[in-house]
Image (cartoon, rainbow, N blue to C red; front, side):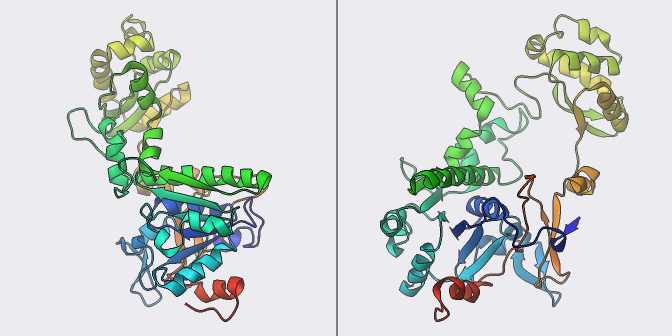
Amino acid sequence: MKKFNDYPSAKSQGPLSGIRVLDLSRILAGPTCTQLLGDYGADVIKIEKPGVGDDTRAWGPPYVTGVTGEPTAESAYYLCANRNKRSVAVDISKPEGADIVRELVAHCDVVVENFKVGGLAKYGLDYENLRKRHPNLIYCSITGFGQTGPNANKPGYDLLAQGFGGIMSLTGEPDGEPMKVGVGIADVVCGLYATTAILAALRYRDQTNEGQHIDLALADAQVAWLVNAGTNYLTSRKPQPRLGNQHPNIVPYQVFKTNNGHVIVAAGNDAQYGRFCGILGRDDLRSDPRFAKNIDRIKHRETLIPLLASEIETCEKDWLVDQMESLGVPGGAINTLPEVFATDQVAAREMVVSIDTPHALSGSVNLIGNPVKFSGTPVTYRHAPPTCGEHTQEILEELLGSDKTT
């Protein structure tokens, strides 16, 4: 695991160096977006309510252990989406606080917010008000259901988006209840869409000097990442049933039980399927016309899967994985989180980073690394997730003058 000081200097020129982002978002979708922009080199200023801060600061345990040995106000949930940011504590509900934020906007290229539709207008911090003075401003609004439509005023929560957008109807065992994904994936994917939209808007601004408003909804993003399942329905008008770990268009492509654990078998074509049958000593399942082609295996799924399962259940897990690897049959083990973070692959790809912070008893916090590997402008980890208001005076003096206070 690399430490913060092993990475390129905090002054390294990332691909977004020179871009400043005013982050008025909280929870996960917006912070995921702004953390990614920060990783790419943008200067991200996180605006937080004094004494409270981002809601997720309190979403523990676990919490960072402070220098006194007691839990701090920084939960692990908060840490996951707030590195490479500086925090300013200011109350935008007060005129003087809103004034400060409006002044900060003048020094920023991008604003990201996730207030309810119209929620910032009363403070003069909505897009229509800000664009009058800053026509080249890029302003990204993230809500549950978007700025328009009959659901525009409904609250935006990841679970509600997963339910509304259909992914829960596809997830879970066939005879079980609809199941959400185990992390806030609707929030995260929405944050990724927001990032790409902002980058596209920056490109357009570079060409025209014109800003724009980006209207992004958790529900829309959720519908968008139905991908093949959604398009299958639009093509056939037949809803995909819950298949557990099985794939609607590939057989076998699922989890199987061995005699000492579980494995994934992902035979993506007929040749791979045939080699897998050879591993099991069941060439008859390869030559059987019901199973020879994937289209036929789909038709006869309910017959084939029990036959494969009975053979696989007699195998030792590691032996089967080794055999598949040696014969080019995609598959593998199902790691627990301790196993994930103990793998040589995670270490080699630097997917765990340790960033120095004086607020932690250990002197640092461990975070999941950025997966993007630039050849010329590497990701840098310049700031640990800040405490609420940690950089207030620093930023006000830097951007607005030393006489500014909150």
